[in-house]
Amino acid sequence: MGILDVAAVKGFIRMCTDGWLQGWHERNGGNLTYRLTSGELAECAPFFGSPGEWVPMGVLDRTLAGEYFITTGSGKYFRNVEPDPERSIGIVEIDSEGARWRIVWGLAGGARPTSEFPSHYMNHCVRAAATGGACRVIYHAHPANLIALTYVLPLTARDFTRALWQSATECPVVFPEGVGVVPWMVPGGADIALATCELMRKYPAAVWAHHGLFCSGPDYDTAFGLMHTIEKAAEVHVLALSAAQGRLRQTITDENLRSIARSFGVELNEEFLDAEQPPSSCRTALFTRPGKRRRAPGLFLPSRQIAPRKKSYKIVAKQFTSDYNKFI
Image (tube, rainbow, N blue to C red):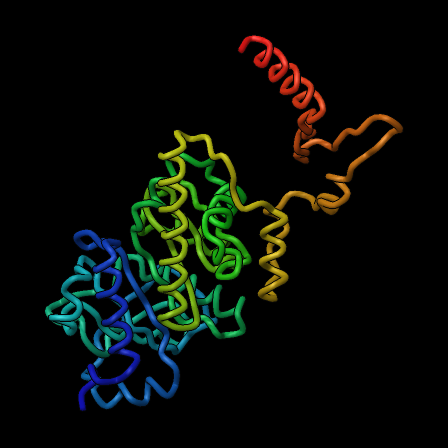
């Protein structure tokens, strides 16, 4: 057995491959990190070599000091992770101050962790605090349909969350908190890292305008599923806007969204919903007056059926018969 047989490492490699096959990782785009559990670390440790030099991250957070992370490499292609894992990914240790990292396995040939590693580490700290330590995955990818929406929708959490919730029924169940939105910023810098951290205190995912999506989760399946669900909803929204030339005829209403939440036992972020309306039975009630019938707006009533006047038909038929007999 080698380190590549450890479940956590195998899962990491599979997630990289799955993301590549989805088309979310052109060239060296995207990055992935996973925080090892103590049990997984014990499985991996026998395969660690001599640790590398300590490298400052440029950020400081003691929340996850001393932890170990699997990470993709800077400039590495997701499509190469499966055939060449030791050069494409690695495991790094964080120092006791939460300020530096060093390589303990992988990233062979002088490779380094992803350039977004400081952003990943800071967001791991934020999401670990927000989830009671449950969050272990931070995933960044470039899903095309979601990126396309950043050129169309207002860059607000409310606009993006509503568009996604209303595009696929499972969305309010998968991410009831909603999604955050970061305006365009230079990737790899402190500004985008800090802006994302602020949003990830509240949301499990953050849209990077004109760039991609940042997702989190307690395990590979949850984080990948979140990315996949958001991108699928974005694809539906893009297709609907295209087919309807920007004018949608109907959608999932706020009342529908609340019904979904009640059925699945989740609590939606009410910031993104309009105020509740009176029950539909009240809005569509019929009002009658003596001799007059009218309806509330939005309620269809069939037009009055007019029965044939059978007596008139009989009179006409009898007259026709009489005239015909006279003629012959």
